[in-house]
Image (cartoon, rainbow, N blue to C red; front, top):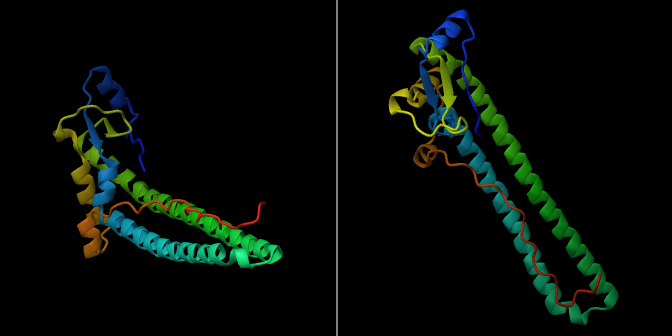
Length: 203
């Protein structure tokens, strides 16, 4: 999510101003801007809803695996070796499929998040350039990735970036998104593997 932004005006006028140390700088906090622009809040809320739905599905499948494991633990001793081996093999296969599904969900959601954020960042670039030109700034840095340790608040263009972005690209934000500041959707982790049946045949 973090990117470095440097708006450079490589013209004769810039070279001259830099030579005379007449440099005006500014900076933006892109992660904060992303959370505050309406489109960013909508995108985050949408991703979180999708994540919650997928997680609920995975939790249900994992619960079924756990229940089936308990049945194998209880009934395994009464099964023949052949039946017990078949049941356990089928259970292992289902477990593997659920774990693979969880990993795919994680990758898919991360890809969707990157795609949505890229669209917003690309819209921010010309807005930052326009603000810099209007204010006569030589360079604009991203607060985090630039390694900026200190700068006076007067150089912070983030509020103006958010205001201008929302004017140019208005989006309807739900009450939930506004209340949570569009918190980042939790990353789906790998499904925890239920313990193997006690009487499982040795593989």
